Structures are given as C-alpha cells and as structure tokens.
Image (cartoon, rainbow over all chains, first blue to last red; front, top):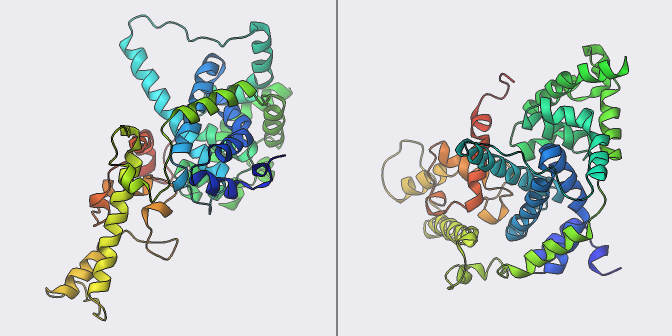
Length: 187
Length: 180
C-alpha cells in the first residue's frame, strides 16, 4: 500500500493541488465506481458509453480545478457536482446535435458482450431505470445521492445548488413519482 | 418539513416504506466493478494534459505561451486575487476611518463603505471569501446575474465550465418550491 493510499480524501486533494498526479489518481480510483455508476444510471441503457466518456471528462475537470476544492465539503460532494454538471453539458450538446440531424441514429448501446451488458443493466433497470425515465434530472440526482451515496441534505443541496428545504421537496416528489411502480411490482 | 426528508414516515404519506430500502438494494446489485481500463485511460489523460501548476505559480503560468484556453480558471484566480488585494488595499490605506452610514457624503470613507457594501454578503466563512475559498464558481455566476458588481467580480474572468450552470439557470433562480 502506497503512502497515498493511507491518506484521506482531503489530504490527497491537498497533495494533488500541489501538482501530484499520483495523489489525484488515487482519489480518482477511490471514487471511480461511484461516479461511473451514477452517470451510467442517469444515462440509461443507451448512453452507457457516453456515461463513461463523461466520467472521464468529469475527472479531468476535477483535476484542473483541484486547487479550488474546499475541504469543508466532502470530496465526493464536490466531485459529484462536477460530474453532474459535466453530464448536463453533454446532454445539452447531444440535444442540439439531435435537433440538427434530420435522421437520428440510435445511440450505441455499449460495447462488449451484448448479453452481459444487458444482464448488468437489467439488474438496475427496474426501479432506477424507471427513475431515470420518469423523474427529472434533479429528482433522480437527489434520490441517488440520498440512497446510494448516503449524502446529507446539506451535501445534496450543495450539489444541486438548491436550498435545503427545496432538496427535501425534490426528494419527496421523486419518491412520490416512483411509489406507484414499487407498489405495482409488489402486487 | 423534516418529515418530507425522513422516508421512515413514508407510510403516513401513502408512500411504500420499502421504497428507500429497495432503491439502495437495487443500486447495490447493479454497482459496476472497478475498471482498470478506465483508470489507465484517465491516467493517460492526466499525464497528457498541461501540467497543472500550483495556485501561486498560476499567476505566471496564465501568461505563458502554450497554456491553453482551458486554463482560464487560473486567469480568473489571478484576477480574483488581484481584485481581493485591491479591496484589501483600500482598508489598509484608510485605517481608522469609520464606515460612513449609507447615503453619507463623498470622500474616502464613503468610497470604502461603498466598496464594502458592494461585496457579496458573506455567510460562511466569516472572512472575505477569496476566490480560492469558493468551492464552486456558481457563487460568482449568481452574483453577476443578480447584477451585483463588486470590485473583485469585475475583474474575474468566468471559467469555461461556469457555463454548465446555465442548464440549471431556470431552476437555480426559480422559486425554492415550484411546479415539478
């Protein structure tokens, strides 16, 4: 185990802010799965490759801005803020591209073994897949940060740039929209 | 309002209590494995990009040839620090001068008071928020949108990815609780 592996996120971020690629790479390795998981679910089945590209872009943006990371916030909070905004930027560019194209081609459904890809997506396709389809991006992100990343209301508010009270309403509305699907599947 | 957050009260609001646990379980089951390929690709990107200088060195690096437009954040940092330093200099130049009441006359005291009142309200931390302390650029963006022009903000160059906040503009500036 290297020295960097024994440091917490804040210590690694400080080291990365001095220019240490190794320290940032350690940070990225710690948070890779969380960021990729979030973006893949947000992107849905058809956007998995896009999600991975966006995740790469998000980490690179975080690297360029690492000296502006405020350790008063959890590193994951800061990173998810960047990841979310990078995704929104990508989504906007995609919407513009599709509007320009007269014949929209279906997005690539991902590489690798189609059967394995389908199996991986299928495990999450029920409730989170439904969430990605039914909820607004804010509701999806709020629910994800709450139930998957165990973030507090304050942290979710920082990521969404909303007041805490608004976050609570967003969470409630998101749960309310998903509730019928849970009840239906339990029947 | 607290009840809206705590999903253990969901059953009182007609929501299934199983929703939260189910969301957690399904996410756990679908969690991807760590990808060495992803990490290797990222590492290549980190090492291929311009070497990120230290914050203080950025004041010089921003002017170096070959620094891409993507390093605008460094220029913003330099400009922001210069702006903050200028404001701080006003306080040093005018020691012992009591801030004038709003609408007071002209002169150095009024100028200092105007500069102080033009600064964005600081909620946390208590000290003047230098650019380096701001966790996100949205604070600057929001201030500009509100039309609050401060000495520091007037010198700050918006970083390239501040434009990402435009997507949330309607939501950010909208009512705290609005239609879904």
